[in-house]
Length: 291
Length: 255
Ligand SMILES: Nc1ncnc2c1ncn2[C@@H]1O[C@H](COP(=O)(O)OP(=O)(O)OP(=O)(O)O)[C@@H](O)[C@H]1O
Ligand SMILES: [Mg+2]
Image 1 (tube, rainbow over the protein chains, first blue to last red):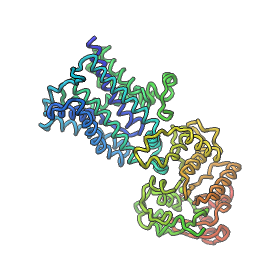
Image 2: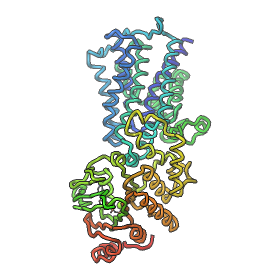
Image 3: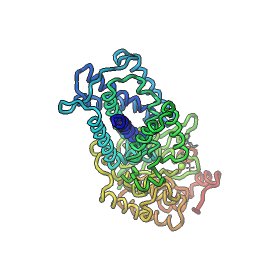
Image 4: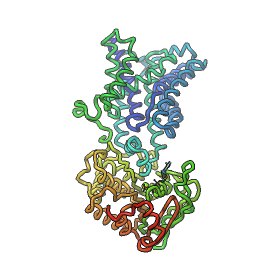
């Protein structure tokens, strides 16, 4: 039972991050292959604020959001100038840079990472197992609600317009700069929350937890489940989270399998399981354009 | 009626060594339908892109509603009241036709992050969008994905979207090409109706019958330069204009 709860916690955390990536990639149409960097920034921010500044998880949370969101704003700038393919490479570069900063700068614990991260407490009790899963589920629900609200807002419509045809969107009063950056801020802030939850469940983090392969993992979840759909990223996180648990021997090939799934989906079912023309999509449909 | 809505002052636009627009100046009065004609590659679309902020001119300036808007980004020009269509149509392909029109209808909300978090799919906006689709004759296609429409209907959609901005000046880049005869008449009437509401229209058109029939005045470009300017009749008889078109063999009176 404990084992299942642990698996569910990790799936939930990854789903939150994948929902964030969906805002950037699915709603605003901006490629990002460096999402794990923001997951990491959230994790390190919360770990440092709780271990070094003595805050609780809940006190640190607003700062975590602020820090990841602002860095997301800063690192979203390249999306304003670069073509898609260059942006893909740039975001990968950002991922490697952030990972090396964690790895080599002593302030971030260097190769040893940060340990003894406190558990989350609520009303004086330490949350482990089921109660922690409850907190994760709460934030997952929040991220889904936020995404639903976003797709129904004018800001969401502006992002769809930019995704579909940037020049036309601009000629209709939509500032590409403003709304791309907004998508990056929302998306990276969600990754930040997920990262913070990760730090406090693991209680030990190191730079390699946030490397480029993890960005590929997040992207695979979004693409597998259905890019730009409300439930797709969560479904993708569940499938990719369960697969290696069910097929134990596959666990060492996890990254390879993720990359393979990404390529196969893009080739044969670009809309993902819940997207576009798939059977499931019609049963379970949440096209962004229809809110 | 003598107020000036648009002034193009000595605009030059170079791409590398290519002078796409060279030292072009003209003015458009408020409420006027001004035709912009010229052979292929004359620089008409480039001039539209300069006016609407897609390109910053190499030199020269653009004055819109009496204010220097040179180098303003396209979304600022839209906010100021400039609507445009694209020669190579640019619908939002995965959105439905009605959603395409709802994008510009929220113009005022995009200027403010807080306002942009209000809901976009409201009854009032929907019925306003539907009204525009009825005006342009594609209301029955409202729920179709815009990418599935044939070219003619995509051009009407572009017109509906531009009108949704409630612009003071409307730039139409070959909106009539790809339309059938009866469709041309319908859209031409719509353009006249739009002008009656006080909206100024600058239109690029290869179909001379349409261009001359609609325009109060005509500006002719050739090789990036201003070749002639005046009322349709005098421009039509201008030897330099005839020469430019005969040279390219493209002065067509058919559609
Ligand atoms: N972005 C660009 N980069 C380089 N050259 C360009 C660019 N845009 C236009 N040109 C060139 O500028 C010249 C003018 O093109 P433009 O599209 O403005 O002509 P046009 O009058 O609209 O022609 P048409 O009637 O065929 O639409 C052409 O030689 C074209 O190849
Ligand atoms: Mg042109």
